[in-house]
Image: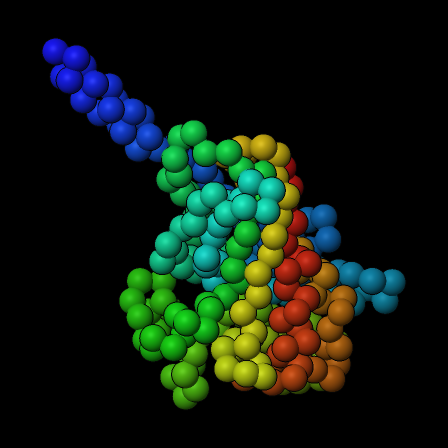
Length: 229
């Protein structure tokens, strides 16, 4: 009888340990203090320069939850393509153990070299998503396109396609965010103005391959992701 009770108790413990809860991560693209709408005219700086964002797409991967400096949960094989044209894609829902304690969130911006080296994949990594260079092996980590009066290009267009995984232009980045303990409803602002204000739109208005300028711009990406709550 005691053996039966013990087995039943162990079963209950195992069942409890497998219980899951959801955590939501919402990405909110903003320009300074305002949410971004595609094709909307934005004005900035004292010269009243204008900007229209026509496309904003980026990969989030390798999501980890940490308690202080210890990784307590990793989302394996999680690759998410966020596309402002499809607002529902800006929200990620994760299923994690119910009793997990965490106070930090680590995110990969883009696709790491190990995954890139595997070649073409499916799902969010399908080349038909428009985030893969067929002429150069590798994924585009971050894509920003639009128009600005600062650009002396055809139709004043700018295009920044940031990617690459081979040295010296491995453009994969990570961002580490401090959370309230065990917060399950996360909102992350993505402040594009911090990129634009650092850009020389007049002279560098197109990046379409891994290079020195792409690396410089990519290193700014972690600072534009900020936890809101």
